Image 1 (cartoon, rainbow, N blue to C red):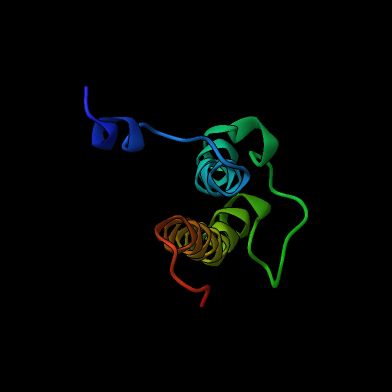
Image 2 (cartoon, helix red, strand yellow):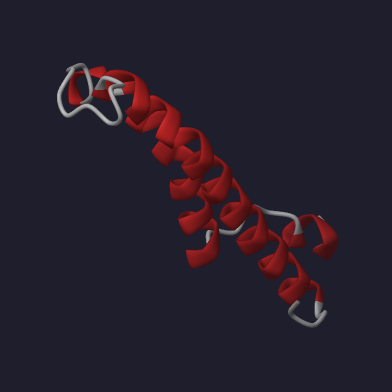
Length: 84
């Protein structure tokens, strides 16, 4: 075996764990229907069931962006590049 194959093994780092949690959180929130299957509280006349799901759209986008930044930063650090 060469040294290059040893370098390509998956490495678990704290930033990758946080990135994974950021990507898993929206799935868990949406699959746990019992937590939001209710009408109250309403927000400007919209039942909780609907506005809770719509709230997760920007939250999911923000968490995905955060995960991307964390992984990209870690990859640059592993290659010896600067952080940006």
